[in-house]
Structure formats: C-alpha cells, structure tokens
Length: 212
Image (cartoon, rainbow, N blue to C red):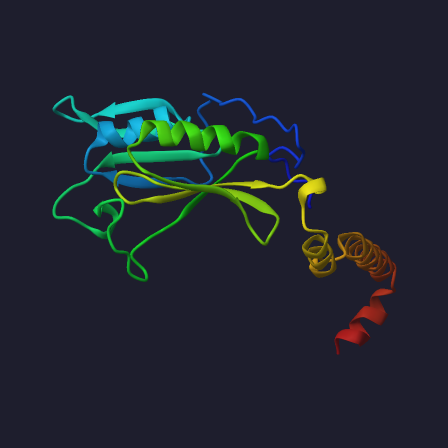
C-alpha cells in the first residue's frame, strides 16, 4: 500500500465506517444514474442503502432535475430523471443484460456493516439484494440492484484473521518492492545532481571540445 490518504479504514473486525461528509469539494470521480422514477430510486439509495441526499437541483419547472447522493467522502452518486425512450440503463431490475450494456459500481465498505446493510436493503424491498458473500480475493461483497437495474457492490476487505493466507501470500509476491524502488530512485537522483555539479565546474574549453 502507498501512503496516499484514503477514507477507507484498515481491515479489522471492529473497523468503523467513516462519518458521512457534507463538505463541498471537487469530486475526483462520480457516477450519474438515470431513474425512471426519481423519488423511488433516491429512496432506495437513502432509505435502503444509507446514502444521504446532499442536495437536489430543481429544473425550470421546479421539479427535481438532479439529486446528489453521498455515502462516504468521495463516494458521490448523481441521479437524474431518465429522458426519451428506454435505454439499457432504464431496464427493469431483473431484465436481461447484454455485453457492454451495463456498468457495475463498487463502493468500499467495512466488514462489520455489510450484514446490517443487507438487512436494511431487503426491508426496503425496492431492489434486489444478493449476499453478503466472501470472495476468492479476500473481500466480502454485498451486491444490490436498484429499481432501474443498476448493479452496485459494497465491498469490504476481510479482517486479517478471516483472510485466505494463500491469496494474501500471492498478492504479497506480486506487489512491487517499493522500498527498493525508492532507494534506486534516490540513488539515481543523487548521481544526476552530482553530474550537474561536476558539469558546471568543467573548463569552458573542455565543454566546447565535447560539443564539437
């Protein structure tokens, strides 16, 4: 892992989900969903899945034009009314999917929240809920399908004591040696700085001869 800050807690049995932020920031990434019934879809994500309605943008007629939902920081989701004829994103929750017609969204979660989140979504009953279930890559995933057929996965790293040690070892072997790479980069940088200093102190006639 790098030292880049992330709101995702380290895997642990007692890991706590970070608080939902209402801060307004430049979003590095967001998804936009089309909804046939905007109110029903927003209710699925807020009442069923724990997102908040950060704000609703009204259209010229006063009706909602766009709803900005958020779960954790940087887990931003925009929902707008579907327009025109039905599109692949507007199909019913259990409608057929063809290659290239779907986009699966994944949101980081913590291990201990998935069972309660699944129960909450099932109680809402507006969409489909599968899991949570363990995966071969040391996560536990909850897969839900919203009223418009959009598939969303809440994925949590399993705590170390519940992880598959064989997979953990395979991942360790495939990760680059960042310490060695850092040492190499530092050495190259020092050599480059030294060469610049030496170059500046060479006699001008030597530099002219090298150029010719």
